[in-house]
Image (cartoon, rainbow over all chains, first blue to last red; front, side, top):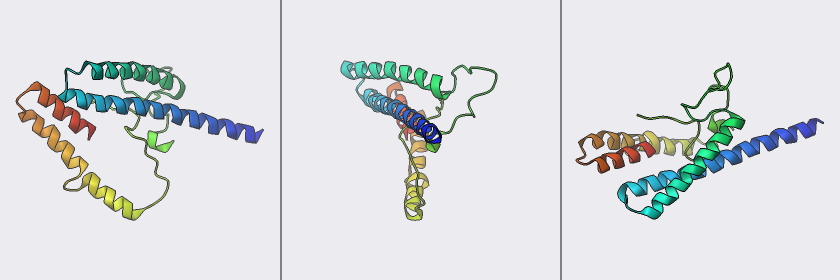
Length: 93
Length: 65
């Protein structure tokens, strides 16, 4: 029973990490595209890629926050307690 | 002007103590030619840039640094 629980905790931590990693990947892509577009503002292919990533990031943000609490300042606080300080900071998990 | 997120741009995991590496990183980060000084130079020089596009460029680079 204990082992089962431990496994569950490990699995949960992994999926949180995996989800955060995909957010980081998409946002890293967007930052690179942003810097590229600053000097190449007429590249419609890059703009298309940027918009695709932005849509993806929005979806990932929503599903991550629903499961693990807020990561973006400015989103709604669900419930009666302030959640911003509840979850670990990203270098701690 | 800035909004921060509870996430890192790139995953960082510190799993051991390494004073030599820490010393090198400290110089890269806060030294005379480090990221901190560079980012502040970008963000201050943007005010004298002649066009909106270049103001935006220096803001984005300085923020990313």
